Structure formats: structure tokens, C-alpha cells
Length: 499
Image (cartoon, rainbow, N blue to C red; front, side):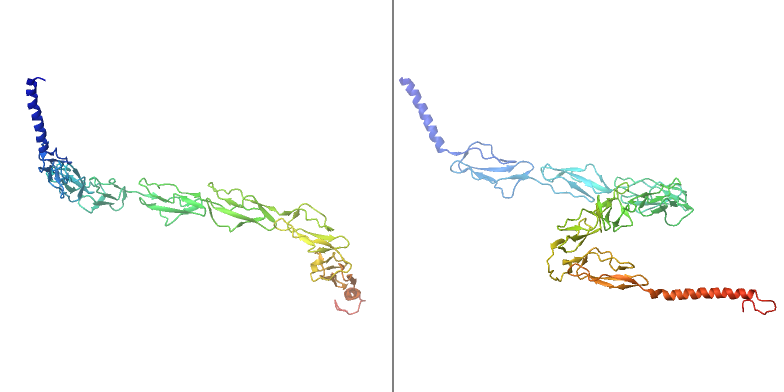
């Protein structure tokens, strides 16, 4: 390096070192932090330690109550804690009579005014804007004035009454002069739109003749008149299970009735009858959807649905039927048999009786019955007889066959098929016969105690024969003497009819 170059570089290095020492000695803060809707009062980019900046809000905004307006650059080259916030300014609300507004009241907001029903806005504008200085633009809000309807235009025979002077909410009531009917609306209201409701009525001379009074399944109600005025009403009623459609008619402005009334079916007639069965708790009327329940009489069972339903066409669904209750063949009893001739099927109430083979006797009821549930009552059994049959207190443990039949008489219980031990049967004889052993008893050995009979009583015919013979004799004697009187000799004196 030449001496000349050294002379040039040394001053330059000295200046650089001196500048660095100066910067270190002059430490500070950079630009202050930003805030929303606000700014510092200085645009500098370097601030020495302990310098302060002041903040202010943008137009239309204001610092909050707790904001700190100043911020200081501290020793370590940083800014202190920022406590500064800006919010939008607000405008004082401006309410109006008979109206209201919608919208915000902060800077930049717009409010829109509307009036209550029956009132209309007047003024240059119906909107206000909140400005940056906290005032409204325009300054004054609009007004709400009552709505009015046009004056009433009357026609001939029409009169009216007005509640208010054509203002919103007023009502005009119409009527006609005597002898005329009002056709149309009887009153009209002034609406919020400034128009009258409905339409203007007219007055007309209307008369309707007497409507058809008696109709199929019904008739008109109330006083029957020769002529009816406009809107007069006649009501109809129908008989059970029918409904009047329509239920009332009115006289129209064309001098005709509004409709023709008919009685239409609204329910079903009485439920259909079924053989050997009945309806449970029948009613006088059945509406659509109602049902009728059936039950069968004793000895019969239901087949099909238990109920019939009244359908939309007011016809009944198919009712059930009642079929005869039957029982299958009676049970077979070992060492025994059925007395009667077998048959198929057995009907409800049928009875069969059992007898046991020799050396066997019945245990239980010897007669069984076909029951209402289609089942037989319990069957007996046949037990082997012993040489000495022990006496038992239960008379159904043994039985006797049918008692002997007798001539000229019969037992008092000839329809039984099984007679338990201890049972006593009485006999009764016909006229002119008297009983021999009038009572017999079923014994433990299965035999009857006596042989009954009826013996002829010869004396019971003597008195009737004597009476008959005496009558015949008297009649013959009377005839004989009458003949003698009729042929008496001449000169004899007789009285006709006497001897």
C-alpha cells in the first residue's frame, strides 16, 4: 500500500468509527404504533428516548373515556403501553309523532322513517344520515299526517252515517229508504291506503216467493211467508241419518233463492240382521265409520268378522254369520259303550249316555252333553264291579238302566238316560187305573227296587153307566107317553102336552 493511499483511508475509517460511536450514544424509538380510526400527531420515523407523541381520532370518531392521549419512547428504545381507542360518534335520535324509524344512529348510519297505520309521511325526505360532527343531515325529520278518504257519493234511495270526517278508521254505514233492500256492503271503512273498503251498495226492491217447504227426508223451519225480502234466510232440517245441503238459503237480488236444498244421507241404516244372532247394543243412528258388533245365540258361533262397519257410501260391510255349534264324536269309554245310535255331527245340546259292559259299573256322570264351545262335557269311565259292592255316599259312582216302561202309565222323568244310585222315580197311571209300586229306587247293585205297573179300576165306570142308562130310559118313557096322548079315544079329555 502506498503512502498516498494510506493517507486517504485513515481519515475515512476514523469518520466511520466516530459515526458509530455517535449512533450508539443517540439511541431512540422508531415510528409509533398505529391505532384503528386514529393517528399520531407526528410523521417522524425516529424519536429520541423520552420523546412523546400525541394521538387523535379521524373525522367522525372520538376517543373513548379511558384512552390515554400520549405515548412515550422509553430508555430501551421501545414505546410504552398503548391505551388509545377510537369509536364512531353518535347522533341524538329524533323520534316523530305517529311514526317510527329504523337504522343506526352512529356516524355514517342512515335512519328511515315510517308512519303508523292511517298516517302518511310529509316532507322532503324520509331518511336522515348521521354526519361526522354528530348532527343529522338533513336536520329536520319528516311529519306523519292522518290519511283521508274521498267524500261519499250517494245514489237514489241510499242514505249513510259517518263516524269520523273521512279520516282513517272512520266507518260509513249504509241503509235504504223504506220498501227497498240494500244490495252490497252495509258499511265501508276508510283504509290506511286512503281508499274505502268494499264497494258502494245500491237500493233495490227485492221479493222472493215462498221456497219449496217440504223436501225429501226434510222440511223448512220457521214461519212460512208469501214473500221474502232481500237476504231473508230460510233454514232446513232433515230426518235422522240425513243432512241438509246447504242448511240454509237466502233471497238474492235477482228475486231468486240462493240454492236448492237437498237432504243427503250421512249415515247407515240399522245394521243388517243375521240368522241366529243379534247386534250388541244397537243404536238409532250410525255415522260413517261407526261399527256394529254381533253375537250369536246359544248353540251358534260367529264366522267372519265380529263387526260390520258403516262405509263412505253409507253401506255396511259384510256382517258375520252364525253357524251351528257342533261336536265331534263323543269319547270312547273302555269297557263301555254309547246307548244311542251314533251320528255325525252332534248339535249343541245333544246328549249321549254310556252303559258299561257286564261286571263293570259307571264312574262319573253317565250322560254327557254337547256344549256351546263345541266340546263334550266330561265323559265317565267304567270300573270293574266287586262281588260286594261297597256303599258310597256319592250316588254318581253307580247307576241303573232306564226304568221299565208300563202300560197305562209313565214315570215322572222319562227323558233321563242315566239314573244314579239312590234316585227315586215316581209313576202316574191313566184314568181308571191305579199304580202298583208307584215309586221305585235305583239300588247299589244297579237294579231297580220294584217292578211298577198300573191296574184297571172297574168301579170307576159304574156311575157313568148308570147315569147314561137312566137318561136313555127317561127319554124313551117321555116319547112313549107323548104318543099315547096324541092318539087318545074320542070323548076323552086331555090337555095338549099333558097326560
